[in-house]
Length: 238
Image 1 (tube, rainbow, N blue to C red):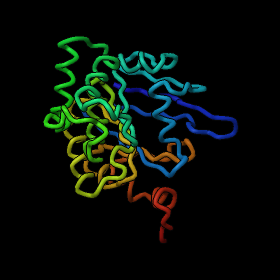
Image 2 (image 1 turned 60 degrees about the vertical axis):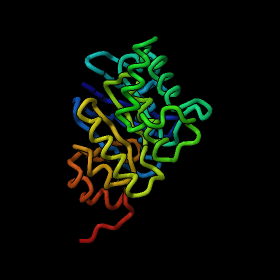
Image 3 (image 1 turned 90 degrees about the vertical axis):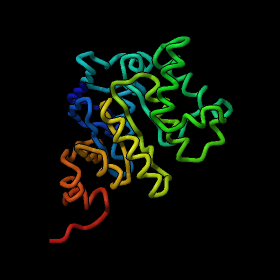
Image 4 (image 1 turned 120 degrees about the vertical axis):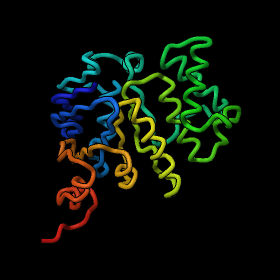
């Protein structure tokens, strides 16, 4: 579904993407890890059209995305959920998700309402649909962020550290949700919580200074000497 080739971007002397290649099929999850400044969020900015690459190609179902603005990419099936929830605090949970269905997916009337209701049910928010988004506990605000993303009717779901700030049981609950959603979408999940990615990801992509350090199954990636030294800050013993 997704094919990225030679994706490169720099700001002056700072390289945030160094000829990155990756491919992803529907029904699979690619976890992305790396230290702060590794280029993880920059990768999502390039995929969503917030930033334009210096070189490289991004194809979704064979359609070239480079050069297309974010709203067109959303209509083609690219959705992003953020680490810090981007909800409208003074609108209800339902109104937030309806806005995503209306403006992200371009749906109207009953079709937008059905899409919003589907997203709420998938994310266990049906019982809270009439509550103000700003009054939700953190886990439900994270669920709302994911619900807004899937309300746009995506093909590619980009999760940007959505488990950040949650307790261990809450992380497990969110990981279970992502595991369910993986059956319907291609998912790329940036996360600093290894157990969350272990539970869901099929492969782990490790970034370092914008460069693809390695891509491997979760257990292999986490056991890598490079990952231990660069990402976890642990010296690899002899």
